[in-house]
Image 1 (cartoon, rainbow, N blue to C red):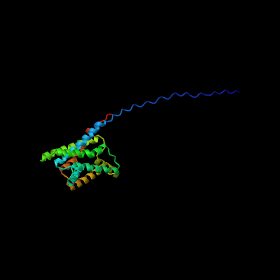
Image 2: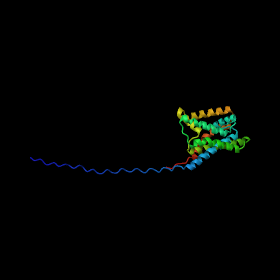
Image 3: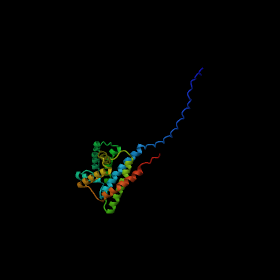
Image 4: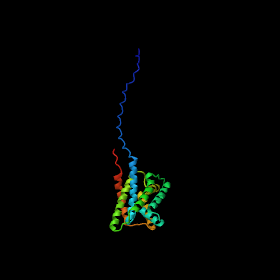
Length: 227
């Protein structure tokens, strides 16, 4: 009985793999804003901040907490309030070192630009008398301060030294930003009042209005990105 010769069975021919569907192209990134317009926005914002702070001083109805502190020191030292603002800003910036905060161009510029423009505006704007004139100047100062805050923050060159102190303490202590900010501002307000700074209806108006105004103007001056 003879057995049939076995032949090797050829391997099955596999069809080539179908190419994977190509992913849709990613949308182009929006172009980054040029440095020159952002720099202009930064320094216009800082100049307006100093000018608006000077208007609050001339209104004579009360200042924001930090300027109450600056004014109190100015009255005790004989320095101008703008010069005190520069000195205090530089000292606050030194507190960033143990908090491991990194300053930006806007941070350093804030220290000098706000105080200098504040003194320049005080030299140009005289004291006003009369409740209506003072109230008008107070309103203009608060609104301009909100616009200035939106301008320089939207430029994104770094926070001011006092804002950086707040965020640094928030990170180091774990406390909420609201609690840290309230603690800082109550402290400087009390110290400034004891030193002779002006606290009044303008202080309350500023505290109530500056948050909403800053938020509105931040939305206005922040460029919208298209997908």
